[in-house]
Every structure is written in C-alpha cells, then in structure tokens.
Length: 190
Image (cartoon, rainbow, N blue to C red; front, side, top):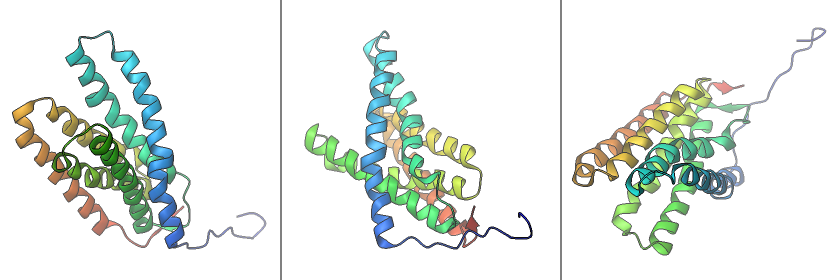
C-alpha cells in the first residue's frame, strides 16, 4: 500500500487455452529439464557398479529432478485459486506422464500395462507439489511427492517386492492427490 492506494491482483480462472499450455509445458519444459539433469546424474553415478549406478540415477536423482521440473511452470502463477493451481499442476504432470509413456512404450518397447499407471502417477504427484505451492508450503509438499516417487522407482529394483510396494505407493499418491484436491479451495494465491 503506497500513498493510500492498494495493489489488487485480480481473481483469475485459467481458460482452456491456458490449461492446454500447462499440459504442453509438461512436455516442452519438464521433459527437457529432466533429460538434461538425468544425463548429468548418469555421469555422476557411472563410477558405481551397473546395478548401483542405475539405483543412483533412476531411484535417487530422477524423482527429485522430475518432481521439480514438473512444478517449475507453476511457481510464477498469481491471482489463481488453490484449486486452479492444483489443476494446473495435475495437467503439467499429465503432460509429463503422457510423454514418458510414449517414450517408454513406443521407443523403448515397455509393456503398456506397466507404464500406464505412471501417467497418472506423474499427474497426481505433480498435483501434490502444486497444492504445496498453492498453500505457500511448496518445499514440504515437494519432498512428499519426491519421496513417493523415490519409493516407487526404488521398488522397481526389488523385483517381486514391487508387486506390494509399487501399487501401495501408487494408491497412496492417488489418494493424497484426491485428498488435497478436496482440501483446496477458492482462496486466491498471491
């Protein structure tokens, strides 16, 4: 408030075009950031034996990098409601998940049924971080999303344990996203 005048950030509801932008930013912004930093993490981990190198790059570095790169487009949104930030985060994660699905299934030959849950995992984990951004608690919620992601990726290295650990992490992530969606409201984020 300067000289008796008040600065007001108007309420903003994202249009379909803006929502499409955030879906596409999951592809255009998040994927290149992830690929660049994953290349660096592979370089940093390459001195380890192959199994441990893969755990280092895929289970430890990748979750923290991917969760940050999915949240990155959301940090400069203002005048949105908590619910709209949450929705935009879900869309960025969905764009990221769709791209990862296409790469793994059509380029690397992974089975569809193995990669399909990951599409929604990325959407829901990004929405958890988005809820943190919307409530001015981005770091703790980012950590929750990254630790869930780390747990999911790590469980894939434990072969048959994945049958328990993988679905448990997926269900937990889906539930938390649904819970935070219901908790988010129409309060404006500044």
